[in-house]
Image (cartoon, rainbow over all chains, first blue to last red; front, side, top):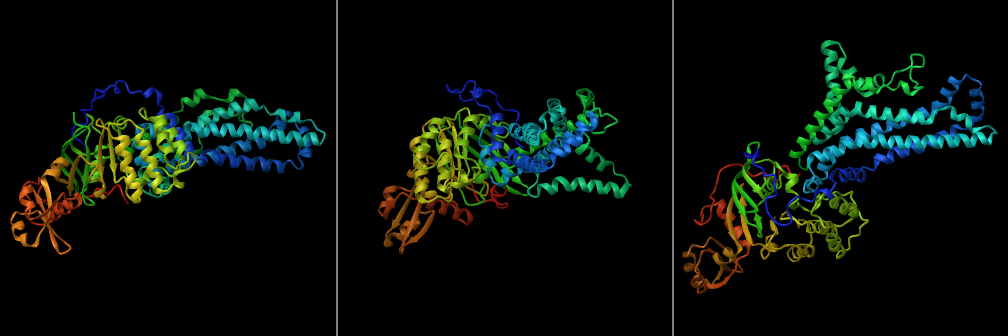
Length: 311
Length: 309
């Protein structure tokens, strides 16, 4: 460390004409850094698009025999009708959420590692962009961009599925309107809420992955995962308990009980917006503990990047 | 105010000393060449100047502490490491967008103008460009930034002669003016001889020679000594002697030009020859009194340790 880091003048020192008040207002480092990530990592939208294409194609195949099934479904009571018709749409949404989670995990593992591997960190650091901006722009991808991508693609996929269903039903002389027992707009609101809640819940995971990717020289995935497994195994062998493992599992999957008030009769369905419980979600201690961990991991990643050069 | 000012700049990696107390002052408007063998500490020194590494001692670049204020400093400092640091996946047009988006002193039109003189296409990705074109691209970006200090670390490494020549020509003709400062390290010493205003040799973390090029020209003479005068010439204590085509070429520090002219043909030495002379004296015995540093103990410098694999 140097001996005089406190002696940094904040004012421009060379009193040239061009100096006073750097024209920073026309630059937008955060915006361009996020765009930069999208240029570099096209998997952020291509992978979900490929999954979407597979979903649309798979659903098209499933429409063989749709008319008969729909006739059978219409004989059920309204609640079961809706559940049966809604099921493929929910499945598509969940697959997409899982896809963007996987994309986010691998994005984060590479985000601060790739720039060191290809030496481009020397170029990025030659520009007036702070390490904080850089790390935050990378954290924005799994926390903001990927949920938005997931939302947009899920809505599109579901609309195409509605269209496919409609065409098949009309072809069989049935009314396509039977699909509208599914409250799509309400479901999209629920989806948006779930994506935000999930991103907040997963924030420490992404923070940890970013930290590891800025830290280790190789094998980012192993360094990210093996310590967790090691702690779990250690705890199991030493104390024959599995608190750590259940904590990790809860961090991966456990956001829903706080974010939603599930109807005890149908355990996983959300029938009305009143089942969204942002108030109680925001007062879940586990959420805030997770966010504190996320902040600590990101702060560590920022500090680490100062010291990091090419590997 | 000096552009770069250091006192006792020191950097240690573990048990090896990369920089051992560098005192340096680079005024505005100078072009300083830092020459040294591999592992001498050149890259470490540049990294400290650029805020890429922590250090001990005092260092001010344009009045700022680089380690504490890298992103502020980089508004006024440009930097080209060797040619391979531009991200390979990026398109030329994206590169222009990005730098224009984050750098307050980037003149996009100027960069486009430089690129127009090359065969680089906007839609190309960096990985599709030849090494020389990547260097042209990076230079175009840097020359379009109105910076006060430009740091070049082996900027022409791996380029062919044409690109190397063009690189320094563009730099001098289209970029450099008296309000800018350039610091360059290179092994291609002969190329920068006529570019530099100041010269610094560095070895094992220490400055072993520091002079302006005017001083260089008035102080060092190389004499191709006529065989019959060889003994007389050697009596004048040359700092280095080498055989060329059966004749001896002697390098003198602080010689009397007229006296030397009587002994043979007097020439301006190349930086490369002076470098070899100084470095071999470093390693060995005779240390000219006028040279600042003397032999020192300690391990090998490790400038490349974390920079090159």
